[in-house]
Image (cartoon, rainbow, N blue to C red; front, side):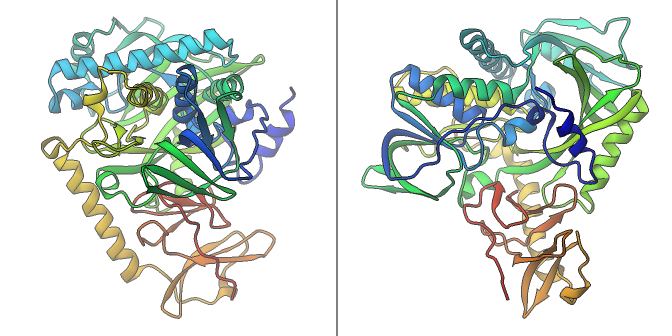
Length: 512
């Protein structure tokens, strides 16, 4: 397949079209739900969590249906790094500060098991997704980030540790490698998996948005845009629980992080997974090759969702980092990805409450490819009644105030301050005619907060600026052209429709 036309399009002024993974994705056309149906297990979300859960349940002979609001695999999963590793994005020392070494070891073993399932599935279904075993390199370039204890904790957790090689591509102060990690194209993997499992007792529906989930008479009713689904079990594989779920949204911090894919002048693409601390800031980079074309991928510059003064500045800073350390010829793709950081550093997986048949999978931080797969393993075992050694450690209904208190207080103080600030201060008393093509503002009209965007063609689009989740006022994301909620991370597109996050409903359109 020739992608030259795609890359020409990406070189336009707004390069936030799609990630490098989407550039190499295939076109799949799963049906849209067109009628009311009944199924044993309904899975909301068609990313790595939902599709893997469907695969495992199908193997157990369960009747399952997946409902994806847009296209399978093209949400959060396709905006990740494509790296598979046994440690966590936050590193192991923060885990060790809250838990004992046995717990840290179990986290590592659980993640190894999930990564192993990905490899097994690739082999079983012969999925062409550029899977490759690679070492992970953790290093710093100055004294602003101490990683000295990470080596010992990683070794104590059962990982194979080696020193940095002599030909390491960056001048590092200290560091080490973790052997036996891996990389792949996550979108091709998910699409390959979906194509293999669809049919028989597993149906996948695209462009089928779930608007409401209600429990009624021992079953669940999922109200979608085109039909009602009756199910015995529901699995929310939506990255963060949908609706107002305060027991989860109060312990999850929503963040965005950015990625770029570049061509190099010297064709010297580094092999491996690189996590480096530069002036105290963490950057992740790796190479990717497909169809004879190679790219350098860099990820970094995180911030709270909806709280960036200028989202484009984060991309500029990431681009500057890449240009300062590599011979960049041109930037091919730019994209953003979302993650939810849990207050006690562990994801929430399992039953919503102790006896619920609604199951969750959230709080993955930026470790979602592996944790999403682990969630599928645990939630499948719960549904089929099989004991799982990690169910208790990650259970979604847990309450650990001692381990979560610090981040819990910080995140909720931030939410409260955003709500107060936005309602008291956000919004301009400006005329609509003052908004130029391509510009967006939150205005105050008749004492109401209004989100207004004028397209490059001059069309004016206006919506209520009040997030339909819990009433915060949205901010304009000038890089990705979306309205982002600074409280719990819901993002809306230029037409007010939900892109991601906990909200069910779109921003109400204002036509006056």
